[in-house]
Length: 186
Image (cartoon, rainbow, N blue to C red; front, side):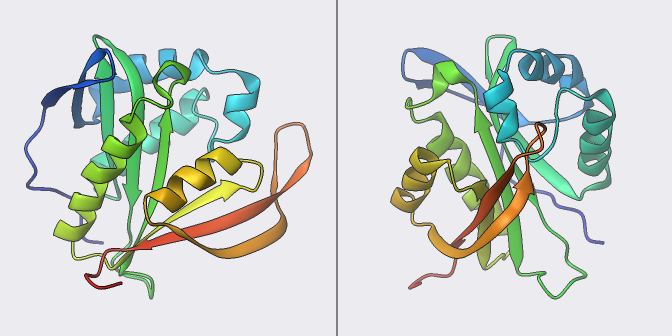
């Protein structure tokens, strides 16, 4: 499998809202900060994460995927604490080699500040650099505000899968698949 890499220069520090945020590529040195970030999330916030990032085994797998070049994550720091992240997952050996999957999450303090948009914009540029044609995101149907935000960013709903997700409490939820074209003119 080809490694996901980028020529973009990091770190980048800029103001987002009232805070000075540093964006950089995530690596194993971020483990403790990511665990602290995960432990600060509420049960409701954790429900909307695809993986239980409070689980050390899940974090180990994430960092192995980064190290192996299967995942690239741009992480945003506010001082020495993680404010949010955006991951790009791609597999050049499958029939979806032209598609990258995104996962983005920002802490409660940074919602509505533009941090999600900034992280997504950075990963869009990396996707273009990798010659990806489309980016996809999966979200629970209940995430209406986030869906509206994605639509403002140019994402379109592609599919609704009924009872596709199961939260930690055993409840099923509908999955919305959204995509954004990276091809000019689309």
